[in-house]
Image 1: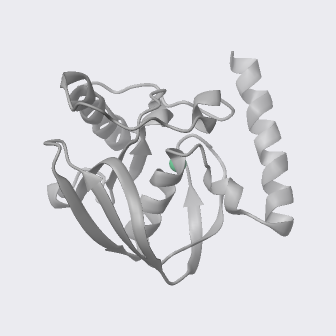
Image 2: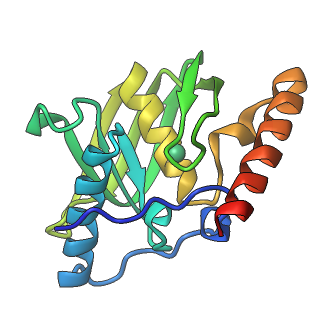
Length: 172
Ligand code: NI
């Protein structure tokens, strides 16, 4: 297990649609373990594989940030099969440091995925868990939460992204 560097916007891997996980081998198990370590260390409540530079359809969510093993969810090849309701709340993203804004998400989702044993499972999630899952699954398609903003919020975030990109260039 290891903490890996989190990729920051505008790293192109964050815009890359991810590939499905094939065989669940040691490399996939290590990826998941590293993602959980990295998420907890950040600290964050969710992480998607592209955020550590891997273009595979893997996401982890843990609203308890390591406090409660029951709340640690691992999703391989996840798919949202039902969504209901809508609510706006503030989101941030480890790959977009310093940027937060209100995003509308479904209040209820039904998600299908594989677990680390390769077994299919379903989970029904409400409210914050539904929001976190939607956010992380978006990452697997190269979508960031800021992409959902419209109007003045979009204009403001466009300036913030420009600044973030300029800061990253200075660091590189
Ligand atoms: Ni994110």
